[in-house]
Amino acid sequence: MIVPLFLFFTFEQSKVTAYPNCCEEGLSRVDLKSKITILALAPLIIATTIITYLSLQSARELAAEELAIYEYNLVDAKKKALKNHVDIAMSAITPILNNEALSDSDAQSEVKKILNELRYNEDGYFFVYTMSGKNLVHPTQPNFVGEDLWAFQDRAGNYLIQGLVQAAKRGGDFYRYVWEKPPFMAQEEKLSYAVSLDRWNWMVGTGLYLGDIYAELEKTQATMNDNIQQSFFRVITVVLIAIILVILLGVGINLHEHKLADSRLNAVAQRFMRLQVNERRGFSRELHDGINQLLVSCKFRIELAGNKLERESSKEQIQEELGKASDLIALTIQEVRQISHNLRPTLLDDLGLDSALRSLIGQFSERTNIEVQYDFDRTVDMTDEIEISIYRLTQEALTNIEKHAKASLVTISFVKKYQKLVYECRDNGKGLLASPEPGIGLINMRERLELIGGDFYIESQKGKGTRICAVFPFK
Image 1 (cartoon, helix red, strand yellow):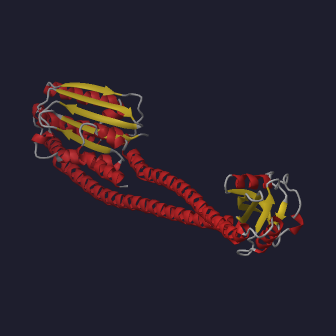
Image 2: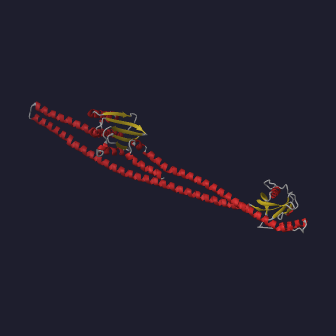
Image 3: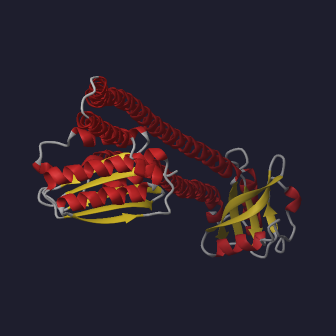
């Protein structure tokens, strides 16, 4: 978010000092602001989305790993407990196995009795099978005693007794299967540990049900999922707050810019009104000091000729006064034409902007011997405000070049570019930087263009000439 704001600040500064592409920057200023706004939000949203997704995936993978480790530890604890229970049972029957005074039948009966009565926890018991699969001891299901269960399968299709016998033959090992859990005899996964009793070729074992482990794992997983979801919602909340803050900041900046633009527009409008007042005052002075005086002098000459006519003066004297009155009328006509031309050149109405500019450029070249290269796009449709602004801008630019630039070549062009109308006047003179500051004429032109929605730029470098650029809204 810092980088786009820095870019925005740099762009705002470049509008004033850029050289030599300020026209293109002015044309794309609005588009750049929109793009910069998007660049301020898009990386934030994309980066946050990617980070959130990766974090969520990492959290899920970590949770799965933790659950696997937790399950392994729980099952391992069960295995250790089962082995300890079998060791305790074997310790309980060892004295009988070592008692040589007892016959095999009596010893077997004692061992069966002890194992049948041994209990641990709520549902822990011991079972005994022969290596051929015949059940000898089963406290919870006595109906199995004496039954051959070698081919018995659980609901998953596992040969239960065969697996236990194989585990016992391996010197004592674990085996998983599905069995009925008392007291409701519901099917549940069970982990058993079996050892062999070599004296009689028996298999002795016990088992623990794994339902409580899975219940604990489900509870732990649910807790982890809740934590992941809460973290996800926290991140989303932070992201939304950040986006809202960026949007509010953008809106605030735009409102501030609009206020500045409004205040500047009001100031420009006030200056333009003062300019109009000054022009009207000048027009009033021209009428009073110029045309009015000429008409008064003309009236005086005509009255003087009338008086000489009444006094029957000579014809030559009367014609002399009338001739002087005619000269004054001619001067008055010329003055009126000049004032009318200053208000709006008649060539614009009679021949159009192209011809008016060619006439103005021709007079400039004839007067100053400065070569002018002129390029005009005749396909461009312009309003009257733009035409008079271009004419006055060209007039002011050529006047400044003639007075200050000491140039030998001037290039004037007007084309349609980037859906805008672009005017450019360039010279190879000494540059405006040699002068203290732009004159009142260029300042007035800048304000005139701003009032019709255009942009005005001046680029100048010492010894490399001056470039005046104006951008107008497309009709």
